[in-house]
Image (cartoon, rainbow, N blue to C red):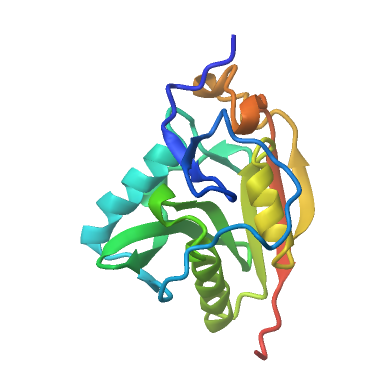
Length: 201
């Protein structure tokens, strides 16, 4: 039987705005009538030492019980570089990244459910791309799991293209056996998406 580690509600419904459980979430086609939180843009910055605990809490809520995998191997968020988004004095989202092979590799992005549909993820991603340009890195790579349909939608709308499928890379980790993810989809594979940046912009 699939395990979900009693995952908490982490997604905001695009229609009613209610916070939804990961397993109970579904995908449906809707138009631009979906409610959206109209708030001032968050302040996105590199995480300070005091920010990291809050950021790790957001990641823990998002990925509860799972061994995160990048390039087919376990990755520790505690050791990753981080960007955080600050909204109304609190951390509303975080992005974990590392530099490798001449690119910026995003290994995790998560938004506090209270601040979803407020553009937090988009601002974090935009800052990561700006940071890659500042460091002269022409590509950004993103890692996710096969069940994460919302993330596939999010990144492809922003110019990312599928670049690799590491079959069984996630489920091969002992802690990840028989995990259920978005809409109860079995978590098995690592998916990578890539975006080429224009370093002149």
